[in-house]
Image (cartoon, rainbow, N blue to C red; front, side, top):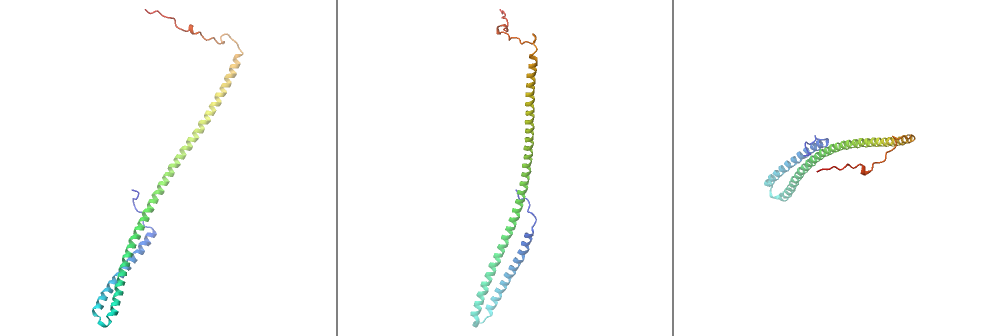
Length: 181
């Protein structure tokens, strides 16, 4: 698996975690205060006389609505914190994958460089071989010219032992028949 170990925390990771904790603690404190307000509201409802029941009822509704909003806000902050944690973890994993891709790319670059060196060496050897073939061809042509000059020089002298002999007739080269009985 590509993901072996997560890299150490970055500056942005530390800032995220430093900001996240106070927000969660503040929301927990607000939630606790909201519960205390609900307790006080219950106490007030038990002690209020009938003349101010209408105002107490409105206050009770406002406190209940406020308490619901605080609870909902607390849940949303907790969800946002979990989401941000997941995002930071994903970014760290992505950073590690990108580092591995960079390392693999560098390794491939090195391999390509080795192939380029081998091709350059083969090209140099091919050029050397072509030069040697050219030199051999020139030497063969020079030898052919020298042989023609030598033949021309030798043809001026006529001797009987140097004269070419006629080819043998085919009937003279056949072996004599043998009697086998």
